[in-house]
Amino acid sequence: MLSRRLKALKAYKTETTQAKIKLSSNELPYELPGELRSLISQELSKAPLHRYPDPVSQELREVVGDFFGVPPDNIVLGNGSDELIYYLSIAVGEFNQGVYVPVPTFPMYEISADVLGRPKVCVQLDEKFDIDLEGSLESLNLQKAVLAYYSYPNNPTGNLFMRDRIEKLRDRGLFTVVDEAYYNYSGESFISDALTRDDTVVLRTLSKIGLAGIRVGLMIGREEVVEEINKVRLPFNITMPSQIIAKVVLTKGREFIKYSVDRVVAERERLFRELMGMEGVEVFPSRANFLLFRTPFRADEVHSGLVERGVLIRNMSYLPGLDRCLRVSVGKPQENEAFLEALHSTLRELA
Ligand SMILES: *Cc1c(COP(=O)(O)O)cnc(C)c1O
Image (cartoon, rainbow, N blue to C red; front, side, top):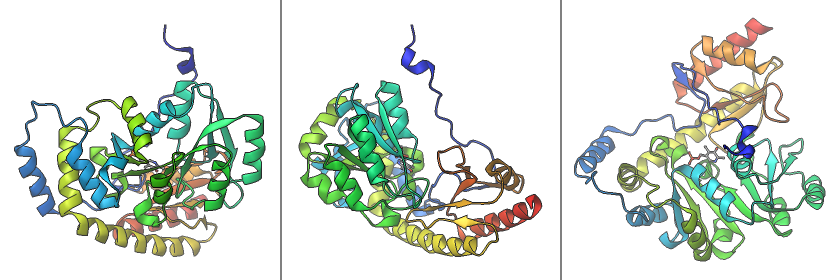
């Protein structure tokens, strides 16, 4: 009775190994400060939890809109941007029409297409991890697509794709989803397109700026697009605690977020230089809060060497074109130091 579409699929597996130092999920390494936590407790203790939450998250959309500089009517909130990726895969085009994904990238784009049984056009990135425009156009001639997903910057490679390649592909009739999960670290955006065009939306999330635990993501688009996505959206998809916590943090915690993001960016540059100087390590420039690097050894061996030394990062070598690659999230200075030491000693052991 269960769908044949699902038989061949596997449930999404994330890294759950325990370790003292966790640099595997691109979270913000800093905890919310005490004053913010007290404010959250106060607000939560007053919340009418026996009632359903606001189904349209009106107040939170206003706060999020103010934080990201867009009107609330141009926003749909999701239980993480992951949920919005599903909604977009349901809402754009028909299920027999293709989804274009430049790979290697964030797996949810493909997963949502697979679950719906949609055909995929996955095209390998070029040697600079940028979009292979010619290869993509050729592939799209063979298999048409109507929806495209771009992680911008790209997870896990860390780079920003060239803007005009995304635009040229869009000119071929692709509804364009620009996933700006790492916007606060890159500063580059397609928001002005999302607010003026019917074929472009932007995704953002609170997960990479200190609130991964409450699952709040957002889609930014024209009101006509927002209206359609709202037809797909589950009515109470943002829980009352999530609405309350996000409101407190995005109003009273702005300095904390800005300060933390600045520190992570500074640490990213330091970590990059340190990895550059490490023998045998090839590290790729990043505009996000993580770094991708390659070593001469098998990635699973490097990974377990680090776990033995109490540091958890992400093995990326299973993705196409990322042989021997791993991804490390930028942590607090002491965490990055511990990672560098653990990597150094692991590589020496493997050599
Ligand atoms: C981490 C990440 C997300 C996360 O989304 P949430 O569901 O909001 O936590 C989305 N897209 C990319 C590219 C990511 O790396």
